[in-house]
Length: 418
Image (cartoon, rainbow, N blue to C red; front, side):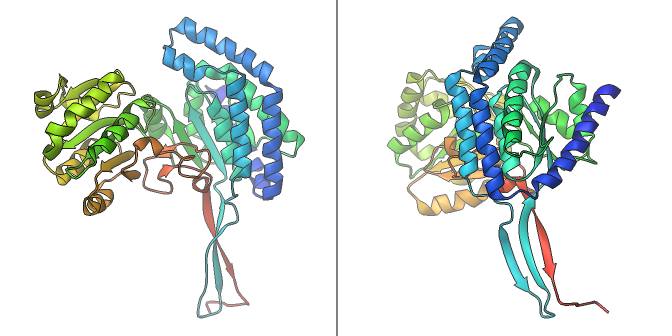
């Protein structure tokens, strides 16, 4: 453990030194480096695929599920998509240096609030090797040095991707140690990274609840996190039922294994008789297992839901359904059982929507839109580092702007307090 801690401390010190150099790069310089990274990634596709085969073989031997193996698997098209993602980040506006606000005090002092990089960021993540590139390039564009700690199941792929990014970027001026990947998978490396508060400004964990709880319990620096994605769609008494079926089916089945997929459908009692059979037929046609409250089970064929169902993130083709007597009851259920991620109301009643949106305590709230749009790219931010359910600093999809802080710049002409 001491050897691992020493190595990670060295990496953290190097990241701090790199962050100073990064903060002085112009937007043009950063974009040129990003383009070189994309080219480097494409040029290294053969070695990345070779490394990925090793991870896949190890994953199959460990008994990883088909879904996990698919998240791990790379091919030429996926590598090209990752490189394309880097080019998209290069095309995004640079938040660093943005003037957020300016004003002058009566004594002549002039103040500016300006966006600046956070500094040094640790990213701890699982499974998907594309996160190695996504996290590194987003942090870099926002002027931050990054230390990456991926999961053991993707270690060879992560190493190959990180090496390609650094090799390509350094040819165009990437500062040394701006992007570093912890090269070993010992779990003590997570603990060690969480202790580097002298050198790291923030840690962002991406993965399951177990990983996030471990990071939160051990980190000495701020943590930007999200736990579960227990998302709801509420079908109001004034809903367009055809629209509601379309939105609900999309939110549940378009990609069920992601954090912005719907897990619970709430239905106003006024439309139960007409709406529930329609949505049940549509869901069952997609292979969705339905679990319902007592009232739901009286109307459609569903497995009786338990208390545990209301607080479960299935990440699968399973949906819990609850009948509610009012909009207020729907809001109460969401705020009690939800994970503060994404919620939707389907209604043609503008007043009902206006009540619902501010009452729900979640990062993203939707009116007549599938929760699957809770995504940085869909919001126009480009790629994202994750979706935060926190309330301080960053909330919802975290794009480039959320990877910056701000600084007050104060100018005067010799003013003193005395």
